[in-house]
Length: 91
Image (cartoon, rainbow, N blue to C red):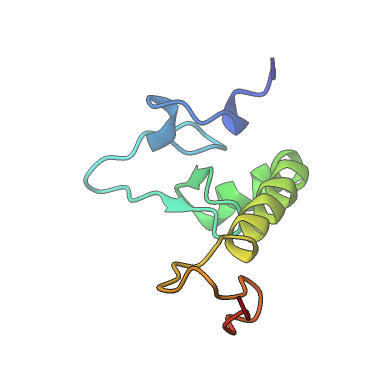
């Protein structure tokens, strides 16, 4: 179990700044980390302050997201198509 609460996406903690803990309200819009999409920040300052703690898990999650997109099987209308090059396979 991780001791760092900011890296675990919990429903209640999902809408607060990962650095300062301020909650999202009408006048404060939180911005999501563009690389890992798992934490939110209220300002650029908070994002910079939290970067040392967030850097390693962010890179790991960003790589996972990249792999999911890269290896996602496309929707194929033909069952005989090659999943890599999408050319019809001889049956």
